[in-house]
Length: 225
Image (cartoon, rainbow, N blue to C red; front, side, top):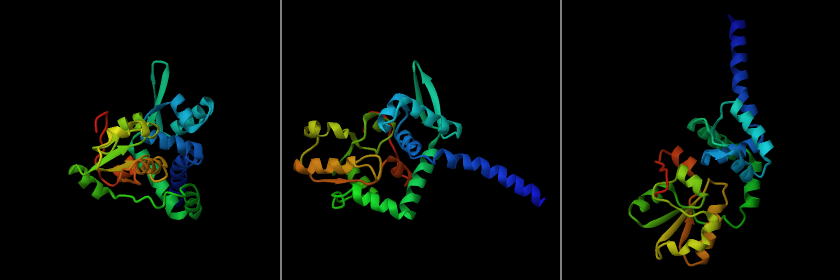
């Protein structure tokens, strides 16, 4: 009986280890983050991750073999998406675990986010209440396709590279809150700096859509806020 239990444990943990092997590469983690925002083609993933299409395809095959992503052909393009929301939850949990236990990550964040420490954040519950009262404008500065896949209810899509050209669309005299992919996405901080330079009262939301959903808040999809 003991020998049987040992064999069973080895077989089970061998299968679990497939997930660990699949996410042991930083580029594959980056691809998972991109896919947690929205489905993408191989070409779009390669461009966003700054990889060749061949390397991107190889990494995606590893993720696919571990059932973390799935692929679907649409005409001449192959679209990849996460298998389900549990993969997105796993990625977020892995990120939180790294934040909690790796001091090296704190040093990296301090180095690359210098100048954003004094940007005042806003918490989720307060933001939701103020959005409902019409007291604040929320902007999603991620690419349009990520906004369409899922966004904070009431948020307006203004990608970071369009922000300066679209400032006139923002109501004067109302606070603006910007968010992007999550706590290590620099776009929201950049957006706040641009807004403040143009006279807006602005803050950033550290959470991305993954964090918003994980905290039990509703997420909208499509073109409309």
